[in-house]
Image 1 (tube, rainbow, N blue to C red):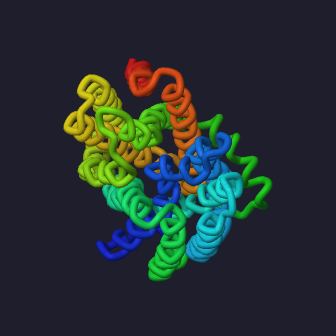
Image 2 (cartoon, rainbow, N blue to C red):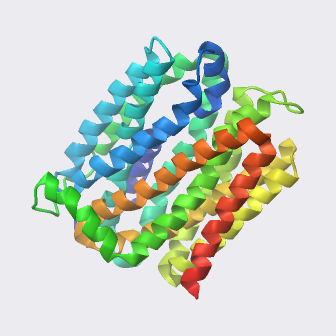
Image 3 (cartoon, helix red, strand yellow):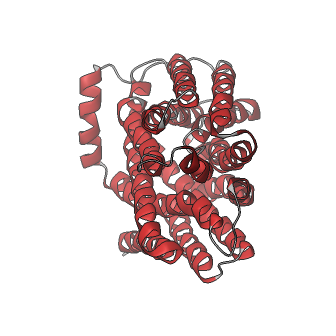
Length: 384
């Protein structure tokens, strides 16, 4: 894949669908946490499921995504989708909470197939349109992130949590089938797997823009994850007293922010990523201020749109920057960037659960505001 020929709407749509199907698996558990707590009241296993899933995703990013620079990507994507199918079946049949935790780690690792697809999109595009193409594919990924909560909240509330994982298996099979329509690719690296992983440290040290982008996006994604991890628990409390289905509906509301993906990509192509990232950090901060200060369903709807719009805008701009650094190492660059981002998401989930147990929604809000401010400060320092 050389990027000399621009991808049409069909391939972009296929990649967007496959990305959305894959990444959705990370978030099915979040609206169902209340249901899972009632199913497994013993111990603390249920509370760590979101964090463990994201840790699995981070592990898959580090150990699996670099293979895209070494192997033919289309075949690799198919194999990884099949592994994801097996992991979702393990979760659906889990006999207890801790087996479900183990299956959640494998689901997170398998779902990184979405990050195998994004470098394919970047390779198909030219330099002048890379942001727009990646933004188009990312719109599918972000749709999967948000609507996954809507789907799992509805399914969990009406048919139980196991049914959601049973449904996830054929959906992953569909993702594998869609990707068969892409052209094959040639590996861009000719080194062994050990050297491939070893080169990650060299890339990290040699690319300060990659480090800055990773730190900033990790903080923003932590703020994003803090909200979604605790939303279902917050809605079960007074004055709302609502269930998983309402928590899932916030995914539909937040999907309005998906409009940011193609727009942010086009602006980043024209003006560079820095102003888009700074604007995104400011919008995330505004979103958390609304969520804390306007604690009604209407206020939360406004806050979640701002939160999703800001995080997604910054993510598209950052990926436009990262994929433009070294064409021969796009999978490895994506590995470093996305590993850092999802480690940030894991921090956001675990920190939000701690804040929830100790100080409730106000503590979660303070945590989210602090994360957004830190991201804005990193960008402000870069501009100086």
